[in-house]
Amino acid sequence: MVLRERYLDKLIQLRDKQLIKVVTGVRRCGKSTLLLQFQNYLKKQGVAPEQIIALNFEDIVNEELLDYHKLYDYVTARLLPDKMTYIFLDEIQAVPEFQKAVDSLFIKDKADVYITGSNAYLLSGELATLLSGRYVEIQMLPLSFGEYFELVGGSRRDAWNAYFQNGGFPYTASIEDAAVRKDYLSGIYNTVLLKDIVARKRISDVALLESVIKFLFDNVGNVVSSKKIADSLTSYGRKTTPVTVENYIEALMESFILYKAGRYDVKGKQHLKSLEKYYLVDIGLRRLLLGDRNVDIGHLLENIVYLELLRRGYKVSIGKVENLEIDFIAESGGDRTYYQVAASVLDPGTFAREIAPLKKVNDYYPRYILSMDEIPMNEDGIKQLNIVDFLLSRTPKQSL
Image (tube, rainbow, N blue to C red; front, side, top):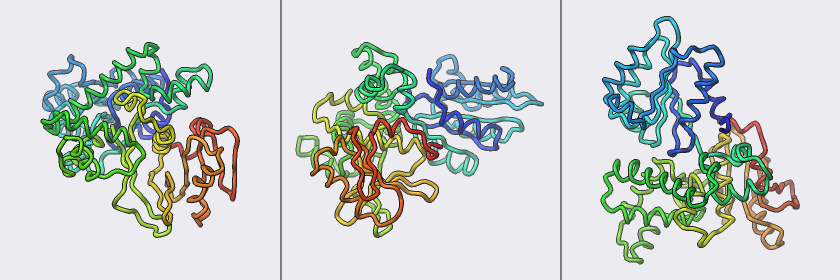
């Protein structure tokens, strides 16, 4: 089991703070394991077992606690009057109106509350209003390549090939049989589809939803719009509307299957409201649905880099500079870094195309070309880095 240090360090920093700690992320990305790792840390720091209350609402043993009144009564009966009690409520969205119990527990003396959820709906609507200013969200992703490599060991090349092929869901790293691994990923996908999207959004046309998903998975890293998707599906006999597609995209984002990168005009210094790109939470899910057909290695590498920048605490946008595009602008704490991502830039024409938008940037922030090439081709202060080297690097920006 790999230690999820970036997330664990954040929980350690927030320990005993008067905030509800909310860990969100796609199903099976490691949220439950993170809570266990933090509980082990607490025990090593001298916290007694009776100071820890841990409930997983995917476990049938806790079924009667799905009533928020009973949940509140169960936890309060176990609070210690003279010591801090650490309360862990895993997959809390399974409890209807859970926010009422969570808010009431939060205001108790010597109660430190941690919750997890697999849907962004967790922090919307009534909950956001009720808990406004009382929580901090920690957004969790599947394993980074650095974490994956630490887990599987062996040669860097073999680890990278497996990661690029299978993705970063933690348990997949321990599954050697390809058919079993496919079944496991299929289980994640179907659970998200049926429990987090179809049931909650009350979607009747599941086939249309899957058509939208496959379109987005097939166009990762491409500029798409709801209208473009609706028109394309309609032309293939799946009649739909941009509004319906937009609702499906929103549901996919709420379930942390899909992430949107907006556009930023570098010279106009403004965020644009159109021509977004979408990236997947894990490229293993793309292979599950589409196999290796129409594989654009450059766009899959973009997807991996995009997620890594999110892990490192950046806000990530697509850059527009005149009529050219920069793959990513990563911003954090007033600093900015520009990235172009390509499978290879050894071809002079490809190198010229990739470096051109970076040359048009007239500020002094760092600019990089990331590729799988081992031979650096730096120019005009623009540095080229090997993608695997970049993914394994540790920088000050790797905080959450």
